[in-house]
Image (cartoon, rainbow over all chains, first blue to last red; front, side):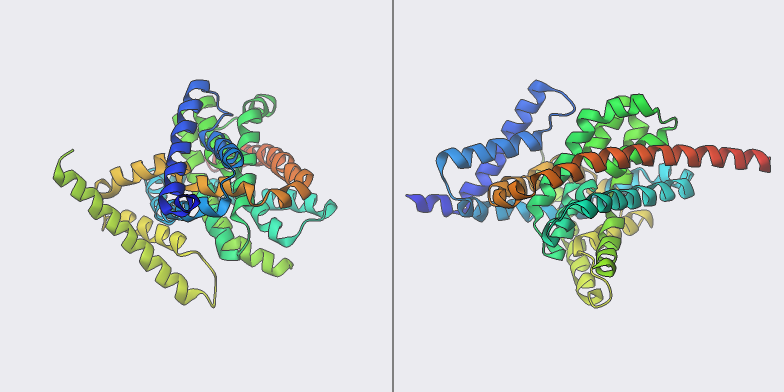
Length: 231
Length: 130
């Protein structure tokens, strides 16, 4: 009987059911800090814990879903192309903003790691916390570190932004749309684009989504080199 | 949905797989110099194809909308793998939390202020040129 759970159908079906449930519940609650990914993950963990189905069984089917992650990353070129105009208007400011977002993220993380010990296998996932989940996975797969910790960190960054983004924007009052877009997209990835949409509208959201991708490409290329130099 | 429409989607998905495959090949050859995942190279290739108008946007627009709207579905299994790594996360819980929350707040505020500052500097410079 338990062999059924080890067939690919179990894991892939569970993933899709969790996704649908997460989506339905998130729509019911309808708050920026409640996202469907978080809800679906929590439901999945509870389900596996209650039914005592081993994670290995889930993984067999889940791998089929994960296959699609790479084509999705390829497709991120489309929003980049659609919003290219916004970048090309303010090229210099835009790219220095993206670069700055990456650098400040790296430095602030290093400051924390300076005071606290953390094994290397956990450091890479931490550095990738501010880029979009799909890209963070690719970096971590390539460097051979835990993609799961990366998902946790990415969601944590998103959650922080969802909870505090509005308040932070009210306190520190960034003036330009570009500043809001680059900040939210470059540091808080997808959640940032939602928050930007809510607080400033379509343009900020478009800036945020391109920044998220540009910053991601940047991280993918520069981070391994930087870590190699520092280690 | 007409048969032709479905066929178009399959074609565009096939094209995306081709571009991804090409990315993987390039990634394999440049590995000794720099390690970049094949999918990222594929993304840059697709962007180049769109920008040079070799590939028209309408050909992959709907396929990309479908996948990008449901991007979280494809990350979900990694999240559930939380169960597997629970011990590691528990051990380093406070550091992970600090990095996730404090660093995000600091970076967000400083980045926004920096871009604002750049904008004002830029405006001043433009004025002096006028």
